[in-house]
Length: 396
Image (cartoon, rainbow, N blue to C red):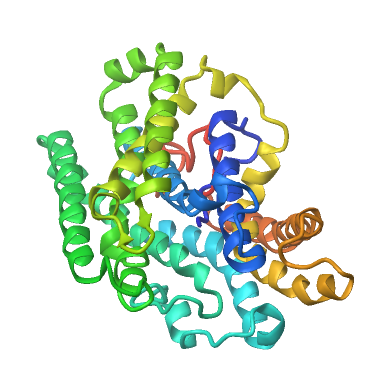
């Protein structure tokens, strides 16, 4: 999942991005509920494609952090890498360390399985050649996100230093990296696509950094449109309904393809969905992000009940929902509520919401306050470049 950027204190939230972020965590919950609790598609087709919630988080992260950095640099701010990484660590580590400590202190309660070595978590390399089913395995997406954050600021600073033709260079780099990821996944599929997924497909492709980092690029592209092509951006923002229609059609189309052709019974993982499908899915979500940003569009104007809260708690919810669900299985079974019964859904969902809210309130918010007091901006000249877009809704 993602430790996405949060809005500046007191700034209004963007309802469209809140809706997407809430949808992402609900998709992940639906998928994990099927895999780790019920063993059946409890939420119908959403259970089958719920894993794509992580892909949506990647796209949102790409936009939110690129938007903050590009916006500040455009306003003349001088990006400080120590400040950037300091803010990132204070955003990411407190929640992560609390949950990691619980896995080490109470392994049987939290999942009952052997975790990778501790240094893999501390270095955010746990996703590399990760064996499926190990304890705290869902932290793999956080590792990829942190690896992305390691690269993006330096790339933006290099682009700013080059000055000439930097927009052309940026678009070319986005295209080349996307194509490279497709070709790499194609290669990995030929090696592992029809074998036991635990032996190669998941460790090398699904969890692999080089196979998934391109999914941040659609979000970066949206930020580049916004800050590098003002006239085109203004024109697009006037076509909110068209953007939404295209984004919904593209996203539903890709989700349908993933549902039917990502994994094929008695065959393995589909070639097309494994090679270019991940990229196409991410770009369809990028269209949704673009539609969500149109200030007069339906997504920006409609406040979906509960989306704001789910968006704010999403990082904490992502980290805690699996161990909470696992910990409740035996107590619920003792009460006669078995894994596949519908009665477990509201209990486990409520417990996951409570656990995520507690982590958010008791750990995340206090450290965010410290971060904003100690390191108020990514930029040396904070008066010229604020940390976040005043309308930005999310976690950075």
